[in-house]
Length: 385
Image (cartoon, rainbow, N blue to C red; front, side, top):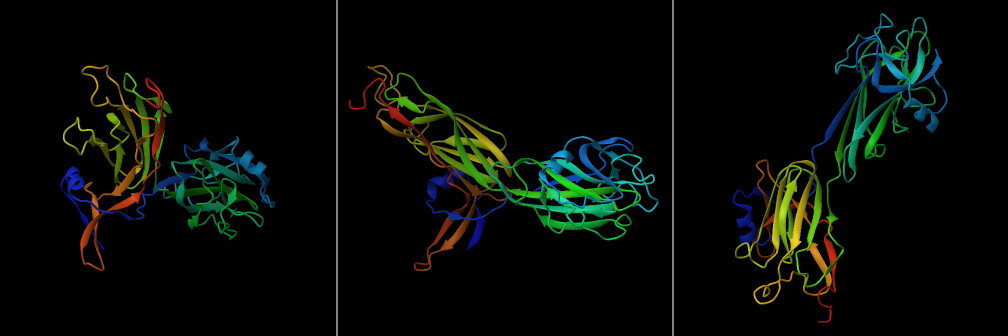
C-alpha cells in the first residue's frame, strides 16, 4: 500500500470517490510532565512537596502501608535547603531541582529519613495508553531500603528504582525509564520518593520526567433534548450533542439525518463545517459534518433541530418531523480520519490482487463512535393514523 494526500476540496472528494476504509493505529503526541524538588527559594517550604518524616540516621526498614502514603501527602512540607555537606552536588541541578530535607538544619549534625509526595495530573479522556518515568537524582544516603523501592506511583512500587549504593550524594544519577502505565490513573496522581538516611546529613535533589500517551477514542453524548419526541409537532424540537475526540490531528466526519438541520457547530479547537450533498440548502438529504481538529483532546458541540415536513404549511398548519413513530436516529457514528501535516485527507492506494484495480481508501484513526437516537411517539397524531 502507498499513502498519498488528496489536496483538492473535501466536498469534491466525497462527491466523486466512493471508497472503503482501512484501519490504522495512529497515536497522539505524548505529554511530558517534569517534577522537580525545591520549587522556591532556599530556606522556604516547597509548596508542591509534602513528606512523612522518618527516623534519624536510619531508614524506615518496614514495608510501606497505605497509611504511610496517606501521611506523606499531608503536611509538613519539605524544606528547600542549601548544601548540608561539603560533598553534596550543588544546587541547582540540570532542570532547576534543588536539595530538600525535613528542615533547613537537617544534617547538623544528623539528618532524617523521608518519604516525599508530589502531585501530578494525567489529563486523558478515554484512558492512558502508555506512561513512563525517568528519574534523575542525587541522594544522601539511599533511594529506598531493604524493604522498599525508592519510587512509588499512587502507592504502587516502581520495581527497580531502589539504589543502595554508597556515595549517591557525590554525582548525578539517573534511573529508568520505568513503565508506570498500570500505576497512573486519570486525573490526580502522586509520585512518592523515598530518601533513606543511614547517618550524618540527609536530603535529596531530584527531577522526575513522566511521559504519557492518551488512548485514542471518539465518543458522542446527548446533552440537551427530550428522549421522546411527538410526531407532527407544531414547532421544531432542538437537540444538542457533543463529539469528544482524543488522538492525533484528524478529520472527524459525522452525519445528521434528513429529519434535522444543523443550527450551530462550536469546537474547542479546529474548524468545523456542515453541508448537504444534495441540491442546495433546502435539499431533503442528510447533513454532513466535517471537523478538522488538531492533536489532543477536543470537543465539538452540535446544535440541531427538527425540520418542517414537506407538503405542509401552505394550506395547513406547519408540522415538523418526525411524522412516524419508532426509533429516530439523531446522527450516525462519527469517524476520525488521518490527515497530513497540511490538514489534507490521507488516502491509501490499495490494489485488488485479482483484478489489479486500484482504489483509494481513507485511513481511519478511530471510529465509528456510538450513534445517538431518540424515540418518536404519538403527539399531534397517534401512531396508527
